[in-house]
Length: 155
Image (cartoon, rainbow, N blue to C red):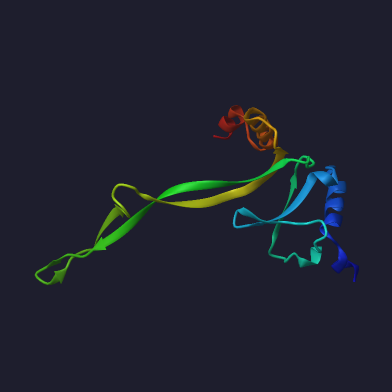
């Protein structure tokens, strides 16, 4: 069966033809729980991908010999507040429970981190300066970010 012998390289080639991005500038990844779970190698069989897997194609610069690969996830930081229910009794009769919010430790609240959105995967030459990295990342995300005027027109 030819369907079971299709590789990720062939998938990238088909995708390249559809979207006009060079095949060597595409990376296929399995996105799981708002993060990149696996970067697919070109020789991996497409038949190994399960129907519930979320596959993302990322456009990256072709890899020079010294490259930094970055996977960036959006994270929300939330204080963890412990809810304590206290029940008081008067004359052996329970009263309404009272809820108190207290931090786990008084001086240093605990935090939970929740990933959200879709991760960004990119690559950049390892000799790049911080300014070049910032400019490069902005070029990658600016098409996904609206201007202030566009934002205000929505609200």
